Amino acid sequence: MVETIDTQSLQKSAQEHLWMHNRDWVQMAEEGGPTIIVEAEGVRAVDSDGRVWLDVNGGYCSVNAGYGRTEIAEAMRDQMRRLTYFPQGTTTEPLIRLAAKIAEITPGSLNRMWPVTGGSEANETAIKIAKAYQKRVGQPGRHKIISRKGSYHGATGGVMFLGSVTPDYEPAPAGMVYAPQPNPYRCERGGTTPSECAERCARAIEELILFHGADTIAAVIAEPVSSSGAAVVPGDEYWPMLRDICSRYGVILIADEVICGFGRTGKMFASEHWGVVPDIMTIAKGITSSYLPLAAAVVRDEIADVFAGEDNIFKQALTFGGHPVTAAVALKNIEIIERESLVQNSADVGDYFLQQLESLKEEHPIIGDVRGIGLLLGIELVSDHETKDPFPPQLNIGERLTQKFQERGLILRCGGSTINIGPPLCLTTSDVDEITRGLDGSLGELEDELADEFTDK
Ligand SMILES: Cc1ncc(COP(=O)(O)O)c(C=O)c1O
Picture 1 (cartoon, rainbow, N blue to C red):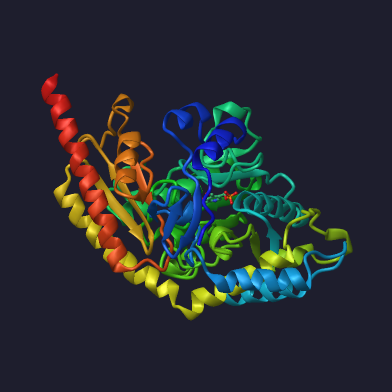
Picture 2: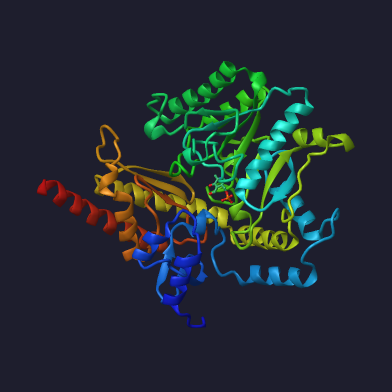
């Protein structure tokens, strides 16, 4: 039983003191927000007014094992009672066991883990390792990083310009190089099939390496399936080609599995769909199902071993990287994911979900594309199927749809023209039916409104 809390006074306090992620407090106050969540179980969360929500995005696409796992809370408590931190220069049992477990479940020779506290830090670390590696192998001029347009790799200084320019914080760090996103629905390189798009976009990376000079490129960073593009799955040729190109030109391949990892796409890691072993894999979110902050850069032996020896140390220390309580939580979380076959559930329920989205696409003309793999899915809305143009911003499609989802008890956001779906992996087909009904009702209502608005003109 949850203690009753005074929603209004807490909201007022939040409006006055809390700087929420990507939200403005004036609008939040006008909308009577923020929503305050007080408990959660499985895929559902309850707010301070007792309203039950279905969390279609599982936190930030991150609560892989689902909410309310008392086993994880117990693992946390047990570790806290035993040991909460460690003296400088030492380490702890849960962290060692976690590093070994990660080496076991990641593909190939990804055997060495540098622990941090979040996905941004993991990518910062990966990029630093890539640059420091290049210096150690006699390639000091390799400082540029290739990322794909529209990707997101984090919010902190060194990574926020990967994938796109963020004008508020210009100038960007030197050496940001942008490649096309292998999105078969709107292929920047004009590919008309997933395979053609994959080949052209992989080839574009090779062209960029040659244009800039291989001796200037340290790394390529890419999500196996791009969540920021609303679950863009590249054609099957893309990742093997990218692996081959990076190996050929001595470029470090970083797979950002911050969202894709831990079963999200129906494999433990999405790189496995294409049998590719990156040089560095970054992991976060699902490693603890967001019960506590933990992330890591996992590095292949061949790269990590270059840092062995006293004079070669990778110089970085983060106070909270590899906290023993977070490691104990990660171990319990991975145990649950394996024991309950949540990776397979993600594949199976994801297939079913995608079929429902395909049916919605038949019914709703404003859906241009549905896509994804496992429980990383996306919907793209268009104003015209031929041109694939988005709706004009003044129509506020995103906000209007998000509001309609809320009215139907769904925590789900439409960011203008795309809807990202990444629920907990314990989702059932009946949950999918509930979400599909909510999507169907919301999209239908919006289409009716748009028809009226255009008739009135
Ligand atoms: C692909 C990807 N990489 C990195 C990040 C950054 O992770 P964090 O928010 O934990 O810093 C995110 C966050 O959503 C992400 O989706």
